[in-house]
Length: 328
Image (tube, rainbow, N blue to C red; front, side, top):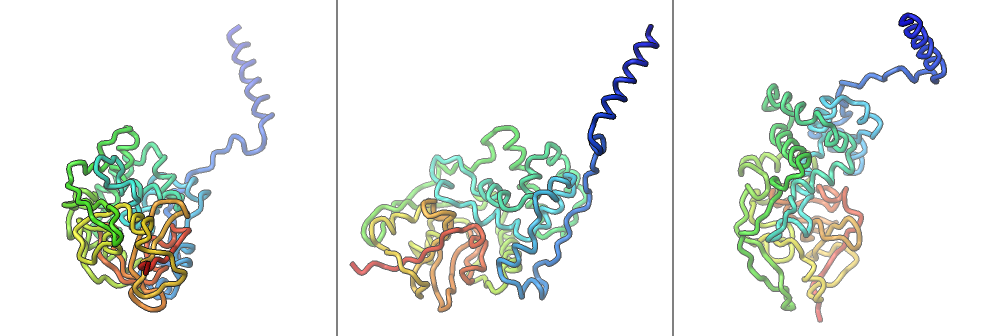
């Protein structure tokens, strides 16, 4: 009887298998080879490319990312030339406000992940932390540019997100705030006494290393002032080039008519980068040279002189506007 049951079960399995479409039982092996970038920063080809061409040349599509092992995804992500953007672009108006639980670094990671499929896929893998730990054990100092710091920051982000814990989030509730004034007298809130710890950057030397990497990623840019954790792009652009404040929302300068919109990059005007017309201001700078030369501070990193396009913010911005001092 038992033999007959086994025989019947085997027959049913064979019938079911025969009914499956061709290839249904085959398993496509995951690709353990990281993506090989066709062009890298520091090469002549990179320097000759436009900012848009560099982004296109280093893009890895969703299909390739999904078929990678977690190890290959991690190495592909750490080798991504524009992963450094996570340290620059997360400072929207809801970050680093007193009482806020928004982390600029976590925002930056999420923004880059939306434009770079391997990072987005990596963040969803359940073994990502284990793979990061394995890589950290064997990673040499020069394997990736600032690779250890980036790997640790990705690990912290994943651990915090998976635990649904706010422990990784920046909450500078205890930081003093100074009320600044626009030219027309409106209040602007400036946070004081921010340190490297508030930006998840371990030290000044680490920030300086990120600045050097940023220069390679954005050819033609120059570092005109070293990194500082206490002031940001909006403070530099709108308040003072020697500001000691972190201004999250520069909109009062515009809302109260202190500055009005202009339609070309006039020397002496301000420039803003936004993801959409009604979104917060992701970045501000000063137009300091003809032909659209900008001087701006990149997050907690240094102050750079660059073209409108050759900065971490341009590729994420759908709206760029110019502002001049009102004469009324």
